[in-house]
Image 1: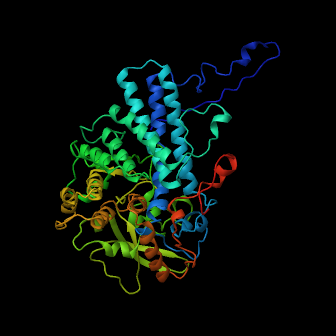
Image 2: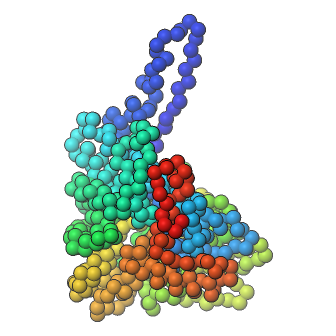
Image 3: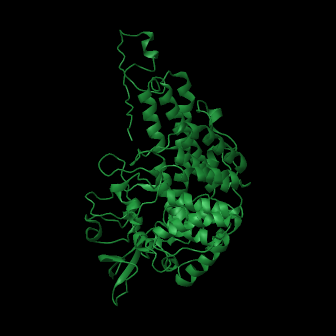
Length: 512
């Protein structure tokens, strides 16, 4: 995405040159909010910038949606306990309002995106633009605001609804709106956005929001809000099945950087490898810490500490075991790295193996890792170009199946469920139930930041995660007795403490 650089102008006033000119705070050679937002290109740049916070939401989701679930955990490194308070506590349900990093970053990223969109919406009506261009910008802006508020209400409950550009201190600090009010705003924004957004007709797509993405988000909203509206969600999802999307033949091809924005993609977060500041680094976090990453990734880099440290989002043994025999998605989703572990957590990797035929060898150590975002060789450290999938056509089919089952239309749900299973190499089921639809969704969308919110939506979070906690405690002696105390108030996160400090009108979520 394009970046607009803002330069500072330093004026030197001579003794004999005093005049009122120095009061002009917006020189014509300087870009500011007063001189920007004048042309279509300005609005395009602002809109591009409004997509950028999605990247932080994807990163935070690894810790808050995957590692919070039974899909994955983390590798415990006795010699490095630094990440405990900012990351490990999230997976153990020990986080609180002081847990920084990914929780607060997600909250801030969403509001950053909302602020950028609000500025666009506040400024665009005063500018003359071609109607088609204006509609496109408005459609994407309303979609993005809906997306950010949906993400906030899913993870933090009711939050302040900022719907105007903030131009004064009084407008910057608002009380929390109710969960219902936030969902209503998401739905209202989407009802504006969807008629203005284009239908995807050619592939690869541009990566921008489309009508399909808007309908997918609207369906999720109808199926997640306190008062569910499954019939309305069914309409939106059925519309998606009549668009131009389709399943790719090869499941692994979905995640290949060479196939970005393909016909199965409804919406994905864009990354670009190179020197442009738009790169990803997920695989460096997902592989274990190792002394010879070049054997695995094609380039040597130290992933022992910092933002690029490894050992995160590690698939659990239960997750590996949960795949049906013959499921083609297993080896495409999860890999094994084996090698030799020396003193001081020093791991020397020897190679990558398939899960299905891997047999541990005496004297060797092995680690599971998420393979979906693994496409070596890479030529720059911590610099990869895999996009992050948000909505896929397979997910739309399964969400429609869930929606139909909830309405007592299991017979209509079955073909959608089996269409996804067929691509996975699995036999057709004879009936669609809440459990087998949820199980299919778990494996189809594994490690795409859906599992935690799926468990909440289907009412299984406390049951599933309590059992998961029992397994983890029996497996790992380092876990505290207080870990995995999964209560209803833990289904959302605490409002970050900094926000509580600067906004006296905020109230904290119960239990924090």
